[in-house]
Image (cartoon, rainbow, N blue to C red; front, side, top):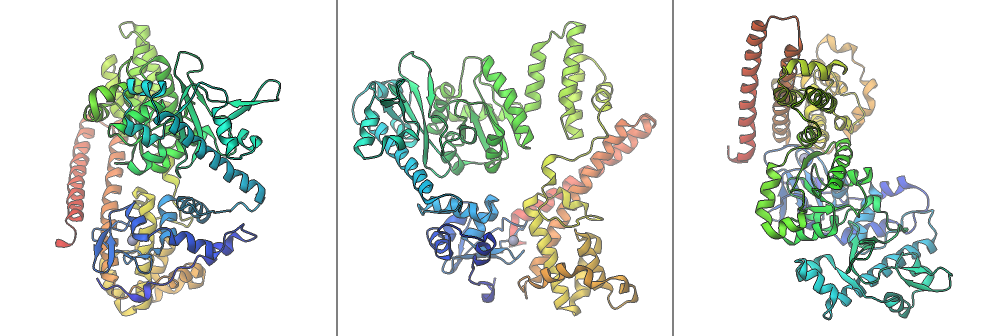
Length: 634
Ligand SMILES: [Zn+2]
């Protein structure tokens, strides 16, 4: 592919900076440049998607639109990227911003901290406060190092305890484990020698004042220390486990300016780099996380001894689509599991429940049985609905009528929450069989008090463009939102091409229909372009769509690339139209099953017809995706 040189422009973030307005602490263009320089674009993008080198530049499959041959180019010399399919382009900050779904400031913060560059952003924070926050991080880091040395530099009880529990020295190192000795002022002495004021140390929660308020002492004594890192790898707090039988068994740093338990997941700083198949494993304790990571299961995280919060759910959502909840098998563990399901479900995450048996936790399990058996158990584990049905079943005796009634009542309530009618029906069938009921009567019970199932999953509403996507373009709703933006951009590029090359309009007309365009204003514009030489175009007022026209005019020129744009566009179109058609047929199926007024034979006949059509679509989709895999060799 020939790279159009003019597209490789220098990226400036001046406008973003201006938009922020007001005094921005120390953020200015120089600072932005400094942060950019600290992150090579090829390496950074390589952390997110597979990048191949291609002559003097690098290429990849564009993560912003669906494509089968790579048109996403990265230029290392200029430190910019550009997709010649959908036109997305920018520098390392733009890329991270898009991929992580962050705003400009959040991106600067994240990338700045990664590179150890001070990013002072909150302009309402005084210099003094800013300095103090920095201090707290520093003290925590020093304390972590102090504890680590105490644990690793000589024989001691802590080391003995960890060895006994099977913790390897690699695990100790990876998690920076430490030891708080059995004395009242070890850390206090160490930190005051480093000339930190006691009042500042107190703000980290590492030391406390005695009852009389005249002396300080160490919070953590005679404990194994687990430093807690934020996702940027900075120590923000500590957990400590007793070495003897004293209580509390676990003790954490108190909430501080930089430590908020509701928003932190232990191990996420390591797990986030190792998330495969969009999956995170959620366990109960520090020791579970350490054992799993140490044995090759590197996507495990835990809460800090608190129950899962909405903030945790959102945090997980940022990194994964599926959560495997692997809590202890005891009663408390089951309760915590059920609570977590609600939170994770609200975030639209897929959920599986891994139960390892009443007396076992992931720590013991993985150390005894190894990674492969652990993964096998995950594969066999039920999803959250199956798990909850199982738990309801355990509550009642199904041999009594009363038990059956209670069981069906509770499962009915549960299944009302299932959004997909097809899934709902599958579960209902299973429950009905168990109760010796007809599936239809159970479904009636489930759906009776529910309005006609609207297929609106909460996560579906996240379309990022506020404009009027409507009319014949419903296929857009089946498209993942990250691809949607790219697809809409491709549409605009096609329109731009027609506006710039009027003699080529018949060529486009041959391939794309007006109804294919996903946004109503696009359709109107295309209708105008298609028929502008005919009188019927008179009712279209270009002025009405001035903003859209401006936006299209501002797009990069993609001359010579229309073939490619069209190819990508038509590819998306075919795929998502098939998916949309399939969803519609499935809905029809459901409606037929629910309809009381049609003869059974008639229903069966229509169902068979629809079933065959769905099979055909599945075949088409498969073929379509096979082509995708084969790439450009066709
Ligand atoms: Zn693209």
